[in-house]
Image (cartoon, rainbow, N blue to C red; front, side, top):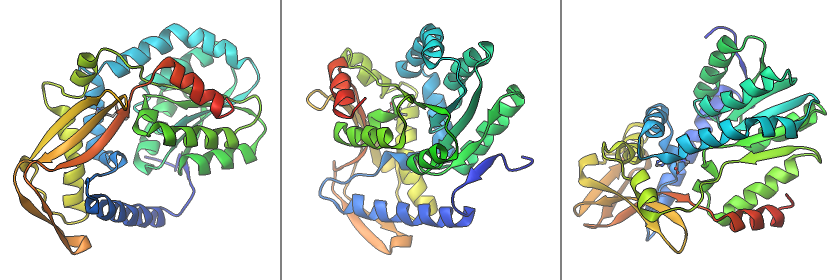
Length: 310
Ligand code: AVJ
C-alpha cells in the first residue's frame, strides 16, 4: 500500500482497542444468557471474510448469483433513476466489490459524475478495496471511510450538497431482526436528504429446501465460517474452545422467516476464556446461536419501507 487511501474517524489504535473491548464484552454477555449466543458480525475477521468469499462461490449459496443477475438486468434502470446530476455513491460495508463494479461500470459508461465512498469498520478491507478500485478505474474518485455506517453518513452529508445514493447489498440487512432492520432504515432515512436514494438487497422467502441447503453446503465451508467465531475467541481472547466438540446446525424457522444457525456442544464441557478470566459450562446438546438470516416477503418490505418514511 502506498499513500493512505481512506479516512479514519478515530486514531487507528483507539479504534482497535475499542473493538477489542466490545468483542470481549459481547462474548461475555452473549455466553452468559440462558440461550447462549454470539453476534455474527464477529465472524468477519480476515479469515472469516476469506471464508465468506468462498461461500459466495458455492453452488448452494444462491444469494450472490441472484443479486448479480438482478443488478445486471436492472443496472440501466438504476442509472436512469439516479439521473445526470453529480452524486455520491455510498456503499455500507464493502464486500469484494464484484457487485458494486456492475453498477460503477454502468455509471462510468454513461459518463455520470460520481464520488464513491465505501464505508466499513474494517481498515484492512477498505484499504484493499480502494487500492483495487484505483488500479481498475483510475478516473474514479473514491475514498474509503473507516467508521460505523451512520458516523460516515452524517460526516458525508455535512461535507457537500451532492445527491447521495446508498447501497446496502448482499442481504446484509437479513442479519438484523425485522425490528432492528426498521430502526436501521429509519436512522438511514434521518441521515439522508430529500432526493437521496437507497438500494437495499433483501433475500425473498423461497422453497425451504433451497434456503436450508444454502446454509448447509456439502463442503462444510459455512460450518467453518460459523466456527470461526470460536477460533477468533480462542485467538483474541485466549479461549480454549475445541472446535471439533461442536456441531454446526442451520435450520429454517418458518414462523420467524429466518435461517437460524447454531453451534451445538456435542458433549458436556467447560470452556475457559483467559482474557475474561471466566470458566463456563456447556451441557451436552446445548446450542450457541451464531446467526439469523431473515428472508422477506415482498409485502413485509413494502410495509417496512412505508413505516420508515421511504
Ligand atoms: C452476508 C449476512 C448476507 O446471512 O446469508 C452466509 C452470511 N452466513 N452463509 C447470510 C452467511 C452463512 C450472509 N450475509
